[in-house]
Length: 316
Image (tube, rainbow, N blue to C red; front, top):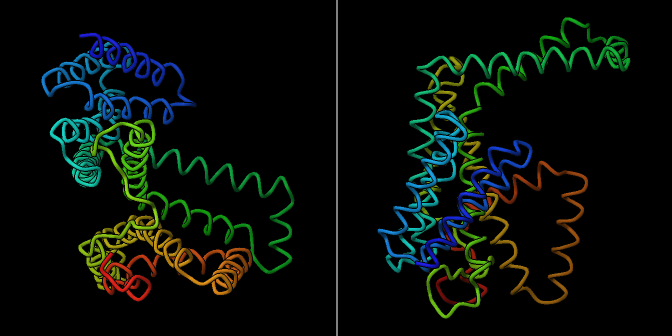
């Protein structure tokens, strides 16, 4: 009973901290979710469910329904799924896989409800306000005159800022998914980090260099690219579905591409390792977008072609 009381107090304090400190909301939420996952090492499934229910009551009472829905969608439900899988002796990567599935399902429902309830207009107003503020800032700083000297009128500058704002609005779904995916990865990593010395295979993570993107995700990139190109001229819903998929997959493939690069550096000879690091540093310094693109492509092709095999002479 003592571990249950301890986790109840810790999770309730973390949830109240989320509600009380909006500026530190994400940090408190990550701690909240991490505690649920670690609790899976000490509690059975029934007690973990009671713990989760108690936190739902506290958050609903203290923060209201909107805060409850947001916290459950992006942190609570994925963390609980990973916590339950930890209770059931599943591996770190099974927990991450199904936590990600829960996150994607939850965010999808959240976005549909947001569209149907008219909540999207709030984000449209916020982005429009940001565009107005940016335009005023450029004018106050004298940048508008500089653009006019270059042949760009104030109207053209405002139209450009409006297009940027519209693109941001159309890609907000991708930002929601990325936020949730980052939360899932970080919560599980933190749980593994704080329990690394326990005598158990649960929450045991492989070295970062051995991370390899599932090949199914590489084909998801192809689907997003096909939708994006198919509706290029119309710029309709199909186009933005494809572009949102590509934005999300760019973040995921960058993560795995970085792991592949670390793996290659690890197995490269000393002289070759020095040259690789030097070239990457130059690329990142002078051509940062090219460096990001390179790592994204590396993550995708490493998944499909097993680019690590020549270094180990075995399957990774």
